[in-house]
Image (cartoon, one colour):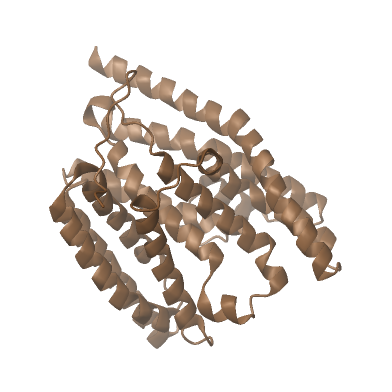
Amino acid sequence: MQVVEKLKPTADNKNPTRLDYVDSIRGIAAISVVIAHFLVPIYGYDKFIFSHVFDLGKIGVVLFFIISGFIIPFSFRRENGGVQAFFISRFFRLYPGYWFSLLLYLVVSYALGMQFPWHQIFANITMFQTAFRVKDIVGVYWTLFIELVFYFMCVCSFILGLLNKVRFNFISSLVMLVIALALAIARRKLDEEFPVALPLALSLMMFGGLWRSYLLDGDFIAKKLATYYIAIYVCVIPIVSFFSYGIEPGHTMRYTVTYYLSMLLFIALTTRFRIHNKFMVWMGVISYSVYLIHPSLLIIYEHFTADFSNFSRYLLGSIGVLLTLPASYLVYRFIEQPSINLGRRVKSSMVKVAQL
């Protein structure tokens, strides 16, 4: 089956049309994380399927990482403002929704009797708390720091004229995979919590760009290099999983299968099994808000259902999953979308000034 798809500009601008099947993958990723947080704990993380086979939430997170690599590097254009425009776009895309989610979580937490020290709050406001060695207030925030590191890599690559170069993407993805392997071995041998997830995620992000070059640009060198990467990835992931997480029974297989399934799903859903369903696409559009807002609903649910029967928790947990969608849409509609539009106006003004 021929999967190469050339993007065409819209009538209104020079940007490619939105890929709805990629939004659908985002939707799947987001709802996987939400279900993993609301419902999987009731069934039990100690059950064989979740302790030894796969991690549903991690699959969602890995899909998000690969999608970032598939999309973000291709938003750089010198004629549209280059690095400065990229930073403006990313700031208005990420921070307003992030700040709202942090505020909401803090309000809900204080209402439920939980408190956080001021230094932790201030560090989390920056989104760079991991760099400051400060704990995330909301558990899902750890992935956002990886996104920021990826943006920094993209900026450096863009300045050097290497961004979106097929061979550079391939080499970078392998280098990050090797770093992940080295950190995994050091983690076991030295008994230190080295950040294996960071280079592993960056490797997958670079692969996302490589895959896009084949899928949308018809670059068959990219296809060959992507195939090489996948083969190496399949060999390396079990080793990384063993040295990083193998002390716990079943963790080597669980992480290995999780990363395998994530890669398989991404490839399948961007080629033979593209989903164009409007509801799934809509979930993808609001996926950032889903990801950020569901923890606030989750702690309310956990607080009030701790002593309930499993049946009641399943029922209320399912309701929590469903309520996450309209709540996230409201955040998207009144905070995220207006912020994105404002960012576009600021970026457009900046480009016009630069052209004078």
